[in-house]
Image 1 (cartoon, rainbow, N blue to C red):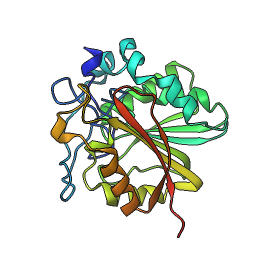
Image 2: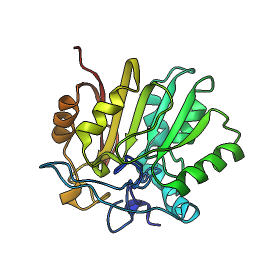
Image 3: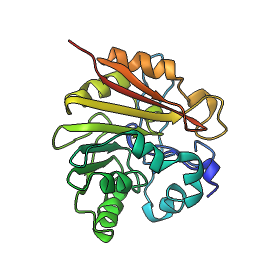
Length: 240
């Protein structure tokens, strides 16, 4: 797989998981460890892109292609998240675990939930966690409208999957119920001017993401600009 056209597939449920897509549809997470997403439309916003990622072993060749590291900069992303060793994290649209395994190593006393709506992706991630000795990494089969997280977390990471979500505001409101006090939501997705990722008409601007997050009860806390093809925004729950 051409890393520059890494399918974006993470899971957001509609979104999540069918995350980045295949070279022609999008570049995902997978371009980042993507997943599959079954998406519903989101009002006046770009429609979600339905994709299936049923052959996890085959998708892993693309999602986990080492060439992707040069522009996805996974280690720098994890470092920027400044996670405590005992933090609880959710990787929405985790796919084959590109980010999930790195997150699990970053929180040895914590826990990471790799959420995807594609059964074969969660099966693969569970086996990968066992094979790599990551007992703190748990695969979770989510639904298009519900992450199905078993407990509140300190951070939710959504890479190359946000644009796959159907009713994003509703999804994000529900996701907020799974955030611990002081919890954050980090969104990484493709910029409109990037040759990677989905077609331009399916990409969302940082302004659109911010508007939807605010509508769901969040406020932007940080912005990181070291990724060459994506924006990296961090949100927290807005004060009541």
